[in-house]
Length: 234
Ligand code: FE
Image (cartoon, rainbow, N blue to C red; front, side, top):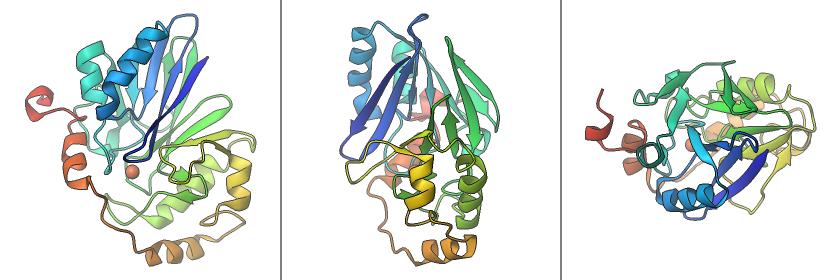
């Protein structure tokens, strides 16, 4: 497998390139629109063909590169059925297996940060979007966020993975790049160390988080896959 972790510093967003060495087919998880040229160059350098862009959710902090990449490279965008982005090429639900050449990726519905959040599971790693972050989790105060639902998603869909599964989140603001399920279960200050559902809900209700700086541009754009209304109608 070919694997690259890519960072967009303005919104501290991680995107991930995964590709099958044999077929040269690739997918990008959570691509950022402003980085499109960088992705195109990297795919060219590695001699890869982008077949899918996979969204972990409809992002409030940056515009997705799904539409730009679809236009340039013909990739198909993938998003959960409940995410509210009906322009996607493939609307997925919990348990759907995705195939990128010889790579197999399982969709797990992990709502709570938004109702359409998914994690993407591979053999030894999981891409958790904003559900589970390294030493944190996504906020639950907008986009149909629900702290109790997020707790249940993490407890039943992520903390049940093998402990040495690598955790790759959609963001990190402290320079961390990767964690494990074991590390988050033991040390995550919000829901590790056996913290109860009630404690987690109370803690999330107390967070006084600022309004995300690009939400007013990002949400409307991402509901149409990061495109413009004329591109995505129908
Ligand atoms: Fe988010």
